[in-house]
Amino acid sequence: MTNSEALFERSWQRTWQGLGTTPPAGLLHALLAAYAEPQRRYHTQQHLAECLAHFETVQSQAQHPAEVELALWFHDAVYDIKAKDNELRSAQWAVQALGQACLAESQGGRVHELIMATRHEALPEHGDARLLVDIDLAILGADPERFAEYDAQVRAEYAWVPWPIYGIKRKQVLQGFLQRSAIYATPYFHARLEQQAHANLHRSLAA
Image 1: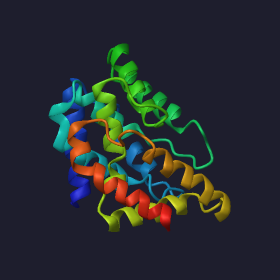
Image 2: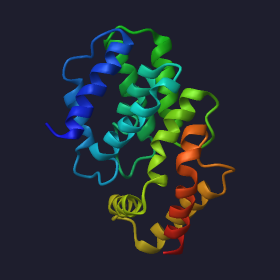
Image 3: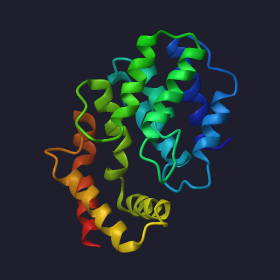
């Protein structure tokens, strides 16, 4: 068993034990298959594993840790490279799964909100969403080698976009992060990744 496989198994069991129920049959296989789809280059099992590994270090900071962890499992479950509603469809899938597991609508609503926060359109208002978003953005503060790999993976996902257009759009995205008062909203990630994220983003923009 690889490290990622062990992490997936450990996380999956912890999530559903925390939710107090069992997952729908075949759901784990379906999710892992989704993250292995051929159109993906960054939003893959590698990204999922990195997010879950970060979560293991900060799970005690979550108000509803099992819901945050489930939201991480689903946050990129649907990934159509030309669609604009991936987060919504991922959230709907998560709510459907929770309904099949006979969990309360309030839990489904919170997980839906968490997944929608990964659209990164605004600073989340509550702690669990801020924690989840910081985990999703932890790649920005990765070591330079991993960040360069991530940059290349994102470009590969958008290989169908002509370079001049991609360059303009990508620059807007990266500058948007730099224009924030802070990239990371939680003290844990801000202290550990903020400086490296700024260095990575500036280097990418210069290139």
